[in-house]
Image (cartoon, rainbow, N blue to C red; front, side):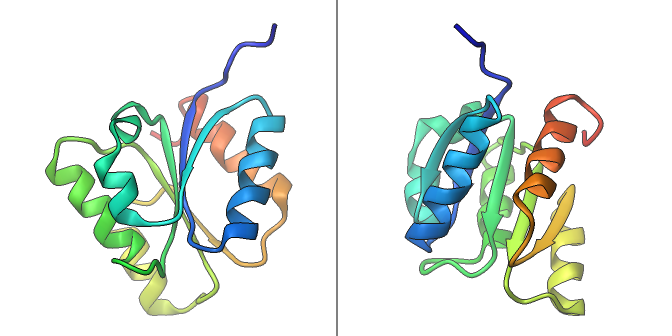
Length: 126
C-alpha cells in the first residue's frame, strides 16, 4: 500500500476542475480533500491538518486570499498555491501579500501543479 505524500486541501468552486485537480493530485500520491466554498473549508477540521492549500481566487463566498487570511487568523497557515483565471498584476500582488508559494494561471499544466505541490510537501516551499 502506498503512503500518502501529504494532506492537500483544494478550494475550487468549479466542480469539474475541482474533481480533475483532486484526481490528479491523488494519482500523484497525495491525500486530497476538496471543497467548493471557502466557508465549507473554514468549517472543516480537515483544513487544520493541511500540508498545502490549493486555492482558487474567485469563490462564491469570499476570495481565496480572504480564506488564507482567515485561516492564518485561526492559527492555521499552511503554504498556499493560488490558481486563477485572472492573471494580472493585482492578483499577483494579492498572492504575494498572503505569502502564496506559487501562482498558477488557468489553464495550467497538471504536471506544473503536481510539481509545485511536491515542492511544498518536500519542504522547498516552506
